[in-house]
Amino acid sequence: MKDYDQKMMSRCIQLSKESLESGDAAFGSLIAIEDKIIVEGHNDYKTKISEHAEIVALNKAHQVLGSHDLSECTLYTSCEPCPMCSFMIREFKIKRVVFALPSPYVGGYTKWSILQDPELSIMAPIFADPPEIIGGFMEKEAKEIMDRSPLWMFGTDARNK
Image 1 (tube, rainbow, N blue to C red):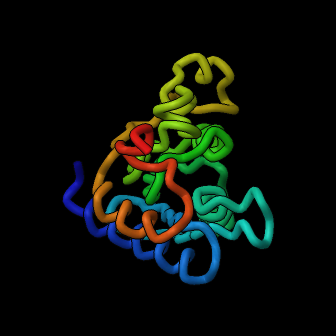
Image 2 (cartoon, helix red, strand yellow):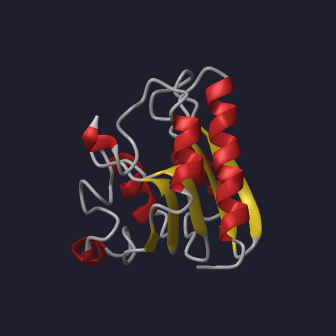
Image 3 (tube, one colour):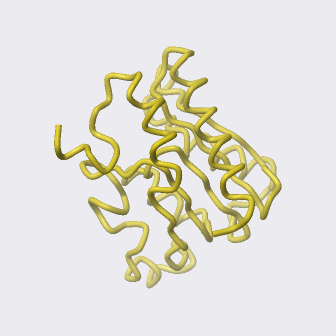
């Protein structure tokens, strides 16, 4: 863990709250280099179905940094990335992923091993080596926001519903 991880995840959780309050799903992400936030994103599902918070943040970081090589970056997100987002994370070469809520039904880490699959690295330079993963970080705080939405399938208790 890094000393600034809590600050970054707190911001993601705030972004998920803002997303929910705007009428979208409760997901928020940001991309940082060390303790400096580069970009933020929250779901924009209403505009375009593929605009998950992680995808929004990845595309913004690509624009801001002028590269698809984000190997110096950490992606923080309020919920475990789905398979679509997980493939994008690997393609953008993110070095570290920190997420709050596990996603046992659709997660790219707990359900499908996309984020940690070493075989994807064979397809270099398209996919990078697996990123460092920290999951379940500040899950309780993220769950408080997610519980305000109709999405019940996130969190360590999701299979007990």
